[in-house]
Each structure stands twice: as C-alpha cells, then as structure tokens.
Amino acid sequence: MSCNPERVTAYVDGALDAAGCPELEAHLAACPECRAQAEEERALRAQLRALPPPSPSPALEARVRRSLRPRRRAASWLLPLAAGLVALLAWARGAAPFVAWELSRDHDHCFGGRRLPAKVWSSDPARVAEWFQGQGTSVPVIPEAAAGLELVGARYCPLFDRRVAHLYYSNGDHHLSLFLVPGPVRDVSREMRPRGNFVRFLRVGGTTVGLVSEEEESVEAFRRALSTTVAWDFDRVDRSAP
Amino acid sequence: MAESVRNRRRDGGVSPLGGDVPTAGLNREERFEAEALPHLKALYGTAYRMTRNSHDAEDLVQETFLRAYRAFDGYTSGTNIRAWLHTILYRVRTDAFRRAGRSPQTVEMEGDGPAVPAPQDALASGAEDLVRALDGLPEAFRIAVVLRDVQELTYEEIAGVLGVPIGTVMSRIHRGRALMRAALRGRKP
Image (cartoon, rainbow over all chains, first blue to last red):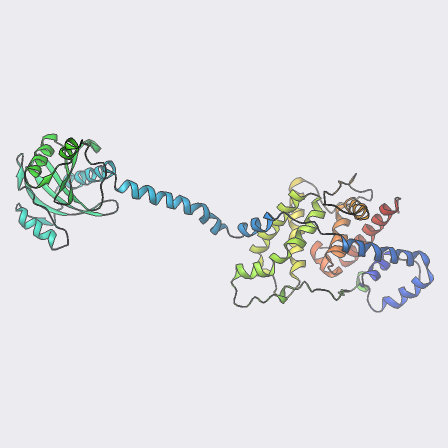
C-alpha cells in the first residue's frame, strides 16, 4: 500500500472502516512518515481538545432566552405602557374637564336627535326619582323647572367608563341636562365650555350634579335653584375658604 | 474513499445526545430550553472560531438559537442535538456570507492572510501558538477541524452539518491539520 495521508487522518479519528484498518496499520508499521503524521495529528487533536473554550459574555444566555420569547418581550415593554395608560385614564376619569366634555357630548347626542331617547317620561321629579331609585340610583331633591325649562324625562346614559343618570329639561327651544355623576370628580369649581356648551358641577346631597346647556342663563338658573334648596355650591365653599 | 469511512464515536465521554435530558411533560419552549440551551457555550466556541471575534460570534449564536427554536419541531428527539444546532449555526454563517457576497466554502491553501490574534484570556504561550495556527486556517478547513477536534462530532455528523460528502470532510480535516502542523513547526507543509 502506498502512502495515503487522508486515510491516516481518518484512521486517527477512528473513522476508517474495520476492513481498512489492518491494511493501514500494516502500512504505518512500515512507513515512518505516515506514523509521524498519525502521532502529530493525535498530539494536535489532544492540544485542541485541551484548549480553554472561549466564554461568551454572561449576558448572552439572557439575550438568547429573551429572543426566544418575542411575546413575553413585547409584554415587558407593553406592561409599563398599559399601566401608564390605566393610570392616565384613572386620573382623567376624575378630572372635571374630561367629565365635562363627556357630559357635553352626551347632552348634544340626546338633544341632537329628532326625539329624546328618554326611558321615563314625566315632569314630576318625584316620579323620575322613583324610577331611578328602582334601579339603584338615589336622586337628590331637584327642581321641577327653572328659567322656563321643564323636566320632561330621563334615562341612564353611558359615559366613557360609567353610566350616569341623565335628566332632560326643555321648553321646546332650549335644553338643559342634569346629570348625576357617580365616582370622583376633581377640580369642579371652574365653569367649563366644552363643545360650545356651558357646564357646571355642583355637589348636591352627596351626589355630584353636572349641569349642561347651550345657554349660560339656563345653567345659572338651575345652579341657583339647586343651591337655594339643598345644594352645596362649590363656588360658595371656595369663597368662604380662608 | 468515502465508502470506506464510517461513522464511529471514538470516545466514551459524555454523550451529547439531547435524549439524555428528561423532557416529558414540558411544553415546546421548556423542552427547547432544557435540550438546546445547555449547548450555548459549545455553539459559542464554534462561532468564535468561525468569526474570530466575540461580537460576531454572539450575534451568530443568538440568530442560531432563534432559528433553531423556530425549527425545533423538525428536530428528532434523541438524535445529536449539538450536531443539529451546528447545522443551523453553519447555515446562519453561510447565509451571512451570501449576503456579504462571499463564501466560507472558498478554500485557499495560502490562508486568509495574517491571522487575527484571538483576544482570549491568558492563554499559555503554547496555546497561543495553537490558536494562532487554528485562526490562520482558511475557514472551510478551520470549521472542519473545530467540529472534529473541539466539538468531537463524527465525520458523518460533520458531513451533515456542512452538507458535503464524508470524503470531503476527511480531506478538509486532513488539510486543516496539515496546515496547522506546518504552522506550528514554522514551515509550509
């Protein structure tokens, strides 16, 4: 057999088949050059095997694990974002300008149609209060009419995240909405004009009342009417504060 | 020639078979983490020898595990997962070369030019020479030698990783070692 260095390599690696081995072994015994090659390759392989393996940075495994979980990774930045949004909404839902805008929109919506979408039709405050009471909402003492606007009916309206009792006052040409707003409303002392309407908040018998109308006089008349009965006007509280 | 070469695991050391890991009752992700992730350092070792720098090696390993995870359903449990991962590693590497307009298959007997000294921590001077000789090999030879002598894959597994006949594997290992021996002796083969 003549020298075949590649077969010597395969022999060193134990990759030569059983039939080829005796023949090559016989050749190695007779050929110092091939024997030297085999010895050197064995030594080289042992040296390579003994090389300290290069170490990746400790962060690599974490990086790989993260990359395997795109959804969880997305959640890791979505979560603070979602939490931020929730906090923002929690803050916004209690802010008077935000609530005022919502009430104003609902006022336009209900009076903007051809027909009022009332669920209870009555000009009697006691009758309307009774209807709401039956559904779990207590209504404070409210006027039957003011500035020529009379109570005509009421219903629940959905706001952004809650439902409010919406009482309709009208004289045919002009309208006023009286809302009973559950939950907190902050910064209510200011007069607001969202969407071109006039909005005032009052605290009446433990309930936040929102008044919305296109006419400033109507809002003012109802504010007075509520204040002179049981209402507790924020303005008055503010003015009396030291 | 290739016919006379057969696959035989020469050593009786630790089996790299993924089947050793008890993975019953694990979901796909957990199974992948249990079977594949323990080979991260081995993969990095090969990637580092391929790229000769830690930055590219880490990118290569990350991309390899991402692809392996996507392809994990195609992996046959109980077969050599380290060989399977190396197949993907090599594919990622060749894809990167293809994008760059080069091929790691290019075999140049004179080597890739001066070897970049490996910034490996505190190697003995003998080991430094060895790494320099290894890094000085053309990549096709270097990969074959690393898969055989460092990763201890069989010729058959290496043929599967590189997608070449076993005879080519033998030839590349032989030529790689011959070049290294010559470099360590300070002369051409």
